[in-house]
Length: 206
Image (cartoon, rainbow, N blue to C red; front, side, top):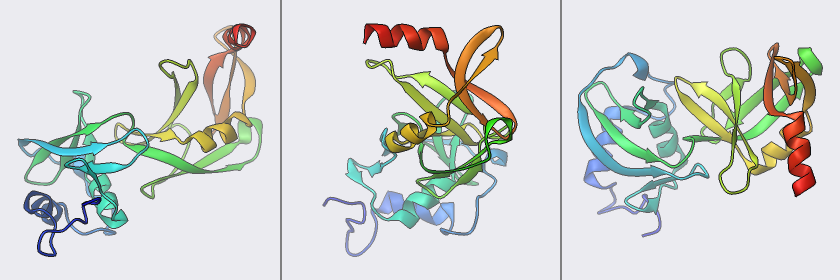
């Protein structure tokens, strides 16, 4: 069984099927999960890998509508954990990095007028800006940059590797707090990625 479409007698495993039923139907829009306050019902063996793939009981969930359904009821709480939330229950899942991956980018304008619109692997469309800021982290082991965009709530999307290369093409230099930084403009805001002097130092030692 290589997929959670791995069915038992033509059906999803009982626990997963029940959760699907309580979550609703795919394609009906995003439910108001931030307003729900159901009791915690334990953890479920669902894992979102760092590449954005979803797994149940160690097997990949290959059915896209099912993944999108789960993504629509996903929430990250103040405790830093991710949960699937329905009106009657909250179950914990494992997320290796960000729950979503930014896979496509459209850029209009230049400089302060620049606008970046991003699409995630689960169909979210967001424009980087005040409501959906970008942030940059340093990758453990390599020291490379890892860009993220806030999608909704506390949920972020990590830029895919090809999209990272596209993003770098739009890097500009700006002075932030008296320090020269490289970063990108979108939605009227400048999002600094790294200090120019730190980049120069890393290039010299590479």
